[in-house]
Length: 120
Image (cartoon, rainbow, N blue to C red; front, top):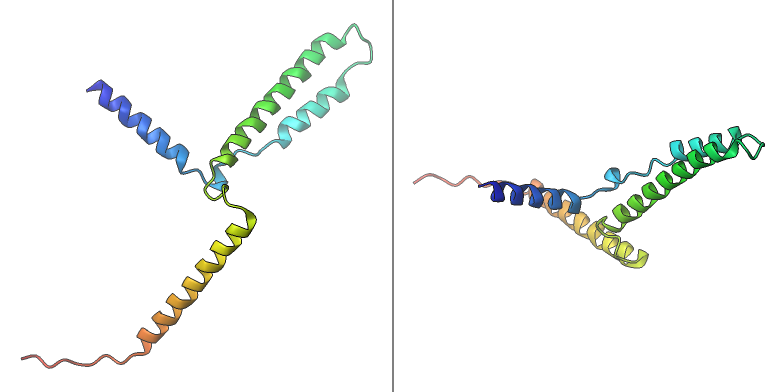
């Protein structure tokens, strides 16, 4: 029974990953960039003291690189990214036409009089 529970958890995790939306993409890079800049500004000009702070800056740069790689991977998983700009615009136009036609049908059927059917 433990195996099926793990399989269900794995399936749910994969589904959650595949249903990624734009709001789910982690693109909050500014705090890391700010920390890197502040660390570089605080670095002493004496070369004997640079080794400790340089390691700190290097660590922060690596964190930023990991975050950028994660964001790239998340963007690749977004739905519709595989389409070119022209294909996306064509799809959008098609959807707008469908919406317009459906609205027209709704208005048409809303304005039709309902006929009373006598009960037998």
